[in-house]
Image 1 (cartoon, rainbow, N blue to C red):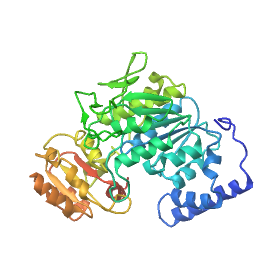
Image 2: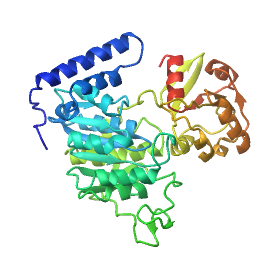
Image 3: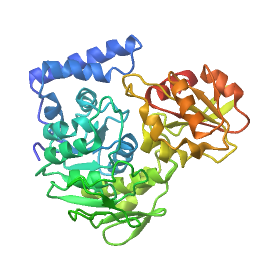
Image 4: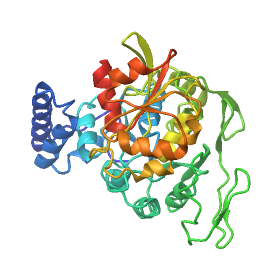
Length: 415
């Protein structure tokens, strides 16, 4: 790796100017009530010094985290685990394109580790700039159909971009697209993290043949591409390490998907010398991630806030919520950050919500209403969150929203 972790070389005058200008732009954005300012700050900084991201990363041991689902939570869990070994800088709030990452690293001059969530489209470029020690690849599934390429093309792009990388790649052995993407890397640690959503991996990414899926295994009957043997695995409530030892997972975050995220995070922490027991104990500290999983009080009701951005995410979220008759509010927007195409709603099995009282809100509530109608599920369309909460029968309300709808709800409930 370039540089000496924990011992940064002084920034050049140009880089210092870029960092200062970026911070000023971010401060102006915050003062104007336009959010954290991290993205605009990073854009300004990179305009003044296009190589700034690499310069800011040179003294850090960097881990990159990319996936369609779970990257913000996994980034947070890894950051918590690595704090056992030294100070960490991270883009913990999810600004995961080069501008947001640059902004985050500008505040990490005293850090030893950089734990960075990266948008799938930018992974290869950010890896080139930051010379990571480790790269965690969790899953690939359809998402933002108007913006992101088809998943197989994305896997191909990762495969080319990571070809020959010096980083240790920690990859999900249960997702054929991830295995294909990671297989060009010389040093891969395979993790059996599971894959609930399989609809994007029925054809072989290597040859286009039909995948066979006996039990938890998978292979292509035509070219022989198959699931690699994992060295780490999620087994019930335990992480199995490469020596066969079982370490208990105790999380405050709900659901099987987060146990899978913790398993991958433990495998990443081990690359940096943090043992599984220490890493997993530290992960227990994480209660919520950028508002996700928070239970908030609003109009004398408890609302649990859950984010689901695409079919795979909705499927995992349905397994988290309390059973009927727990009331459920669903909110869907289709703004720029969500992707403007809502056809993905037809890929979600909303029939799994049968028996729940359902209230529907958001910019695209009528699109969602049509989908629920076809699924044969009872629902009420509401104009606002306040109206939906007022209509909900007693009990903790499960609120599931996609990205900008989730931010709208957080603002409304003061979270």
